[in-house]
Image (tube, rainbow, N blue to C red; front, side, top):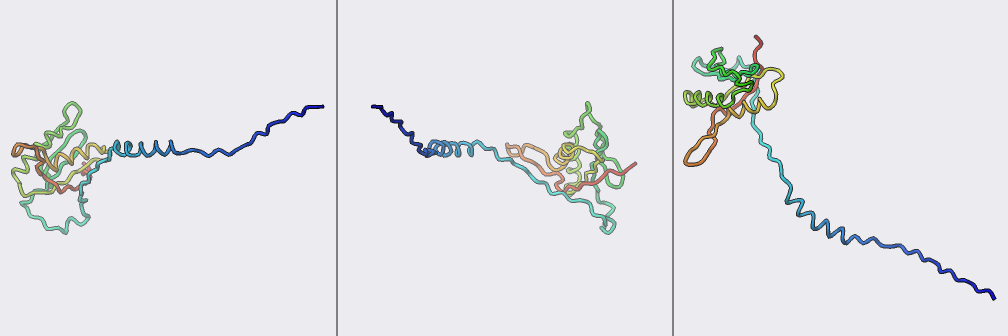
Length: 165
């Protein structure tokens, strides 16, 4: 008599995926990742662009038309009627923004009610230079009442192109 071998049938069962450890990991990691995020801080400066109908504005002869022109490596503080107040040439190939701030502080002492300034830029002026000039003419850091504060200089900033010539 022949023995019949029995082959055991392999039963294929569908295994359920256990996602519990993965969910535990996500629940643990989510607060850790959220606490480690550094949120970016961006600040916005309001800028007034010069209007095309500037001749319609009434001006007085005593008004100071304060301008800061970025020419090459030099910064020129001037009256809009053509008079140069201070020429600040580059020092070691770098523009002297600290000296620009000092000049603007002196102008503010002489004309305390003045709030606006025009920044004149040459084509191709890099962004960092524009921001540095704006920071220098807008305010400066000073010590008041035993703490450092930002004192206001000329917060109303307008941008324009330097005249050709």
